[in-house]
Length: 315
Image (cartoon, rainbow, N blue to C red):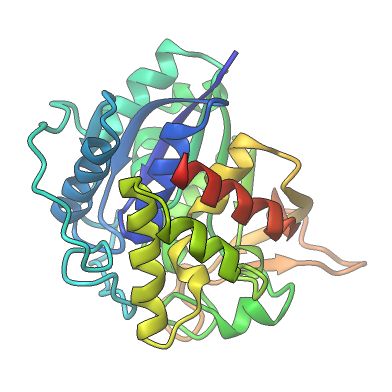
């Protein structure tokens, strides 16, 4: 039986490849793609999701969601995914239409229709999920789990050197809407956070053979990824930028790829130097027991992850 997921995202080139992985995996049943403000405004991310769905030739609902964070105005991402939000590849304008349902309403409906079966794979700010929980708190015990690209937990140098938020030690998805992240982290739903410590680790890099396989493929999604790699490298970034969000889908496909540990974590919602920080209390003694206990990614099999991504792109 396939694992049912909703992919909540903000495409973005790496979110776009996450859609590719989720749609092409024979392990997952992708019920819907929901989008929101994050890497780009909500209108752009919704259109980009439609473009990827059309590129793949699949028939699933795509619903646009929150256009702003829950209680604050939206920041501008200091990292650009190009003029089109997809590494300047300029996919054709989509012909298909968005779902008539708001993304929040679609999440609520699908979770209620599939109690205990739906995993939410979140690669964007958690605004849609938090709002769904606020409007329909009955769905919280019905969600199987949440797998999210979320946070930075200070486990290694990648957590600090590759911080993506606009404060020195924050991760973008939490920084954009820390109030939403706090709601979801504290919801009681099983929560697996894949932070920058793992999602942007320095071993997430493509080999020359990976690049050759992508460039030698006629698949449009392979060309998409190859173009994205060239785009980020041309701007002085590492290739991990093209596949950060893919790690959440990869874990949904194969749970042996990433190792997690339980941690007590709090979210800083006060403005200033630490806004959006995910503060892990990793002490041996005197741990703050009132902080929520979640599962934090601590290590991954990066070679198997990249093999999975390349194989799903070219097949």
